[in-house]
Length: 411
Image (cartoon, rainbow, N blue to C red; front, side, top):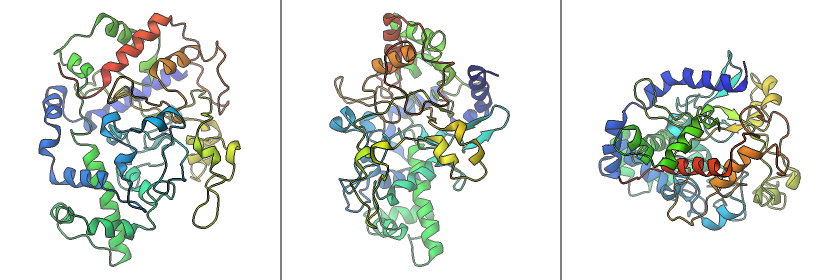
């Protein structure tokens, strides 16, 4: 079975999950999105406090520092987006290796698994899928717990240190309301249980209608409430047809009228070149508290993507080589959301491209124009991109269509 057919099969097989995950159909989602923050449940509100609280060491960095609502819950700092696209940690000289993925619509990703029939990995969170959801039953909850303890992100020294900050916060009474008991960290079991509760609360907020709004122009279009312009409609037709975007980013309603999520939750090596401005290449000169360099390989570092994660799991190590260089297919919802028209955003896992126009042109011409070589030349997808034969006008129409996917549209 070729790659395109595989993806379409995976999309169909995921629709049962999507019917469960996107419980509320468009007719209910749009009014809910219009009233976003007014009626969060106590659990959602607790998750929101945790998401925006500066729980770091030193204490200036929150989840929202790298996942801001104004940019679709991804990186909000213009100067960083223009260049390396990777965000500094609580200790400013320390950088990780990838651009922040969107925290919006992250809660609908299935638990990471291998589809034996199709030979594809599906689900999880982070660009490499390592927040699998296997432990807490939700990849977004697993993901939320990672940055707190990561020395190149929020840099807290321990789970207990995180809990102590929450216990001292103004919203500590809300914790007791949600979980039925005060926050505690006296025993190792208490620490583990309550640290997990932080991740679960954040994921609850990320699943709320304040984050997953489904309030784009395209949602109103699917609900029959507005029309697309002629160019937007043409872009949608190309998106679903000649450009083959929908092979990985399905755009149709689900069988129960669930709104499309614009991702099939799989992984791909798109042949993306290195971002030479990625600050991680200089992290051989920046050290952790134990004296080891953050990135011992320096400029020679190659991002292994999914394959690197699989290599850490004995049951999947034999599949690591064929998945090197693959990264998770992101949702295209909010792909152009920004606080102003000239506000810069960065795209793909390393932020190498700085506009949707550049991304679409790369997809269209990767194999027929003089682009930099792929960071990982193995496993590059040549079935669905690289030589699509799109005209400049068709590229422009696809970009215009993708701009209809930003939440907060007012008809």
